[in-house]
Image 1 (cartoon, rainbow, N blue to C red):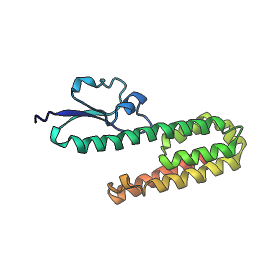
Image 2 (cartoon, one colour):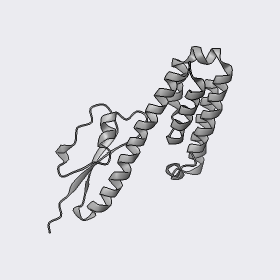
Image 3 (cartoon, rainbow, N blue to C red):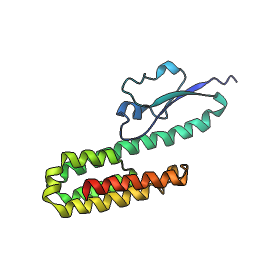
Length: 171
């Protein structure tokens, strides 16, 4: 039996990654040329995998694709919450909470505050509820397994910087 090299698409899954790159994340192909070239600035790579390890990489690919789908779902929840903030603040807070259980990014909070500043200025209670929700969620995310790989001091500094920024934005 001849075992041929295969190729797997990797991208950095975060709030900046385009939907095209997310859709390819974890995919395995016989030819490297089967994958699109990254033209939008997303961090991506196409790595060769030995045929004898194909089963392992297929399983890994399923997890990678699930993570990409999770990011798309998180974005949809965050976007819907932002849209509902003015008219249905309790619904929006619930959607933000669900989104934050998947991940939370300070630049998205910055964008939210810039876009909805009029609503947030007019409703200090809502602004404070958002601040509490985001601070807790941001702190919680640094307990996730993927952050355990960071040196503890770095992890604590990143967490503190994010919390300080959230408090600055919504305080």
